[in-house]
Length: 208
Image (tube, rainbow, N blue to C red):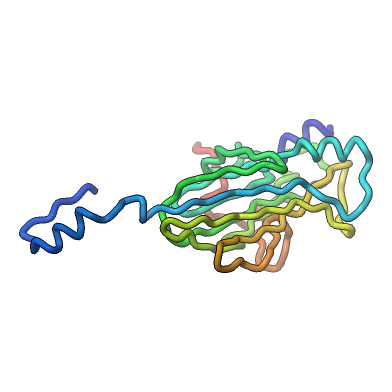
């Protein structure tokens, strides 16, 4: 049952009749200056409580699945076959990925899962899955680097079902000038949307 349940966890354009100075300005703009760098840095997991050795080994080789599209990043602990979003990245704890992206504002959504005992996939999702929309907002500036630092930590007061140990993903965006407050991507709170109530674009609904 444990292995089965674990399967859930995871312009072109043209100047016409423009003044000469405008044409010169447009032609000398470096397209690279409109791009910036995003580093998704996933720290090694830590625990506030002592863990069984077997659990510790499993978590050491753990990874996060995530994707990005249209200035939206989604990190999901629900299996991506239930998510209507290109979840094309899997980054292990203690590793990082670097992307060159257009400058501008980006938003992060977390799809969390509280494990419950059930023999039905639908019931597990209904009872335990939830969506934290736009839980973190950050900017990528032209020619600059923004780091999305994710610290997976097992909380001392965390509770678990059927021996599943799920780190809380404490996340902040860091630049040379500032950083956002640390926030949890996968903690259920007042603004979380329960899976049965979520009608947004991230939920995969099979066409009949």
